[in-house]
Length: 404
Ligand SMILES: Cc1cc2nc3c(=O)[nH]c(=O)nc-3n(C[C@H](O)[C@H](O)[C@H](O)COP(=O)(O)OP(=O)(O)OC[C@H]3O[C@@H](n4cnc5c(N)ncnc54)[C@H](O)[C@@H]3O)c2cc1C
Image (cartoon, rainbow, N blue to C red; front, side):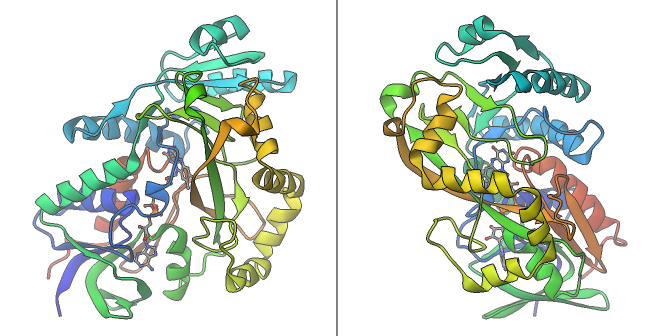
């Protein structure tokens, strides 16, 4: 049986970027990327808003803030080298209620502390000059936001990795991870992959694999479904860049926003509702075992208690297209449910602590020769190359360069 130097489980952006950083740190090493799907980026990395975030929202000094800034730059350079199209669109954060205007100013201060350039607070007149169809009391222009198709980024990473000699084992679902002395065995129904080191980048499944490997951190990954709508083509011209509401500071989600994509289409979304299956992309995807596990977790019950009103409002908006359209019409007046067509959906892997807190920073935990990525929320797609560097440094810190 081949014993690889490093096994990376998960061919989403985090696994792929980690493999790339490992190639740089361990030239000549035997690295394999394993995924249960037959192509890369079939989950979060291929079902997201496609926004290259600027780093506006994150607490200055947090890993999320610095990895977003570094990662954004690396991503733009990578996309340019690999001819992946990027639209440098900018975005507008719009306050529509008086109580949100202070928060716009706070965001501007936070963005400045995070090193963003070109931020501009503007009144309704300034907003109209950038986004003629939008309305608000106060807005923040963020020129460093861009758009990309992250699936294209993942495919480019796969091509680059293949050229560099990294192997791919796709269609192999890992069921258990066991480490013994200085090697790790990742077992699926059809075979076992062995490595001296293993990186668990399994996104929605990462905590299940970690617990199966005997790592109990108390955290659970709770999946949140985000549904998108498409603005009908005759209205798409009303949106020039991306238009965001002011986010609720108690939640890690950014709210239903409008995004003009590279193909000229405009999406609205995503909302954030509890997914009733770990990969529950549709409302009707329901797993009784998953629901039982959620109800049995104290962190989930506390989360529900802390955010009951928001959860009910989000669920209503998920069920009612009229309610969804009203949240868009708050900053793009005149939009009704007739202007929205059902679009794609994504499921976020959101780590929750036993006290019901939604973890908003990245969480990586080492267990012997295994590195587990237990929380990689947005902007992890933007920041993937910087996060990959960080994870690879933890892998190499596990000991000397692995030898076969
Ligand atoms: C709706 C939504 C909108 C978002 N918008 C943005 C955005 O605009 N900008 C941004 O920067 N970020 C955004 N994000 C966040 C970003 O997409 C994710 O943080 C990022 O893609 C996480 O990448 P990942 O590699 O950790 O996870 P994933 O992409 O989910 O990859 C995990 C991989 O592991 C594989 N896997 C799982 N279990 C197993 C197993 N047992 N065996 C083998 N393989 C396994 C899966 O098949 C998958 O390919 C968004 C996320 C969502 C869901």
